[in-house]
Structure formats: structure tokens, C-alpha cells
Length: 155
Length: 155
DNA sequence: CATATTTAGTGGCATATGCCAGTAAATTCT
DNA sequence: AGAATTTACTGGCATATGCCACTAAATATG
Image (cartoon, rainbow over all chains, first blue to last red):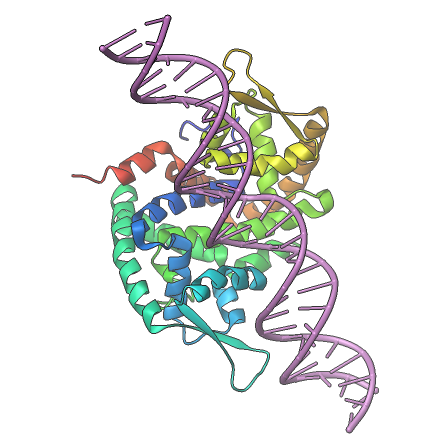
């Protein structure tokens, strides 16, 4: 164990430990975004939108493991600044789809270049293989299956 | 790899993956807090305060790997509702120290009982040993040493 | 000692994220 | 078909978190 001792929740609580690590990485990756005007969270969003096929807000919220309304709020600034656009679905009038604007594509590429620097630093500091494994672990924890097992504790 | 494929940033970005997992766990642990009126983040705060010796805001911010002003904001509701109190340091008039109120102690204990349920579920779903190792990994990533190595990439 | 610098917090502003209530459109049920 | 229910989203409110500018107090400097 590191210098964290029994007087720290981090040594015990999985959730608190995860949030704290998320804050640290958020900080580090945000720094890497530099003067692009966007943050790591926004880079994630733009990237997920880019690599999805015009996802609906619902789709995107599920992929992000984010509350639908929270997603809506988070997209506002990106929409306002012209990086994305939200268009109604042709078949189902309840549904709205998100996509990058041309400008958004360019911006996503620019951010990706910045991101790679941070990513490389992480790999170097933490270990490339360990990093890949960590991501697999995090993906598992983020999965709906995991949430289901966690909740259906009834045995 | 799980069902996440190359079209998901989660498969690549350590920071995005961490945040996403943090959202999932936040959700799961918050649910466990039930009708206590407080959330997992607030439980973390109360716990860290409880197990620290009247930390200064600065101390606490460092332990939480949180921005000092962010911490200040986050403490507001807890102070307003009487779970904690913030008192000026006797020697250094710039410094303020945080501590639980009597009411706060009781509340922290109540929340701990709820937390244990979530924690047990996590251990069961993820594996007790794996969970302990994950927390060590997260603690490492949260450490100032890690941030330093990450930033001082200059070689 | 007087001034420059550093340190600890505060307040305002902006994004991140979640809950709840409400609305409209689609689906199910009788 | 018409009513009940479900689904997808929106808007308001509250906490979470960070940046920047500003203030007060302590410390270092000449």
C-alpha cells in the first residue's frame, strides 16, 4: 500500500478511490488539451459521437454511462459553439440524433493530437500493458452487466 | 476486450474510461446511500474529515486530490446542513480547519452502514482480492508522485 | 523595518452530472 | 379505435469540480 493508511477512505472505498483517480486523470488530461478551449470530457464526447453512427441521445447516454438529461446539458456548450448538431430522427419524432459538424470533425482531430501526448505519458508512467489491462477492468465495471450483477445481489 | 470495440474511446482513453467507471460506481454507491439525504461524494468527504485530525482546507483538498476552491464549494451544503463546521486556526489566521459536528459523527456512522452494503456487493461482483488491488492501483494514479512523473515527461 | 512574494481562502463564472416533473410521440392493451 | 403505458427528451434545481481574480495574512528579502 502507498502512503495512504487506514485513516483514508481511499484505502477502502472503491467508489471514492475511483472518483479521486478520475479527478487526477481529468486534471492531467485537461492540461494536455491546452489552449484548445475544450476539456477532456468534451473530447470524450466528440470522439464518441465521431465513432458512433449518428447516435440518438439515448444511445450516447448509454455508451457514456451517463444520465440522459445530464448528457443533454453537457452537449449544450458543444452545440452552442458549433462543434456538434442535434437533428430529429426521420422516423421517430421523439428521437434526436447527434453528429459532428464539419468544424467539429476538424476540432476532434486537433484534440486527438493533444490527447495522444497525454496518453503516451500515461503509458510511460504507468506501463503500456498495465494501462491496457486497467482499461479493460474499467470497461467491465462500466458495463450494464456489471451494474446488473451489482444490483441483483439477491441470492 | 468486452463488447466495446475500436469505435469507443473507452477502449483507448485512460481518462475517459476512468470517468465513465466513476460515473457507474457513483451511481451504484449513491443508490446504496438511499434516503439518507446524502450522496457518495458527501460520504467520502465526511469520512475523510472524520479520519483526519481537523484538517485544514488545504490538507483536505490535497487528500481528496481536489481543487481548493472546488472543495470549498462542495463543503458548503455539508456546513449549511450542520454536518461539519469550519473553524479558523489559532496560530495562522489564514488557515481554516474542518471537523464533523456531533450530528455529523452520527451521520457518518449511519452512512458507513449503508456504504458497507455497496462495498460488499462490489467485492462480490468484482472479487475481493481484485478490488483491493484495484484500489491500490487507483491510489497510485491519484498520488502526487504519479502526477509528477506524468508531467515531468521531459527526458 | 518596509516591501516583495508566497500562502490559504473566498466569490464568481462555467462545465459536469444527476433527480424529478412535465411533454410529446410511439406502443400496448382492451 | 381509444385509453393506458412506455419511451425519448426538455427544463429546473442541486451538487461536483475547476479556473481566475481578489483579499488577507505570513514569510522572505534587501
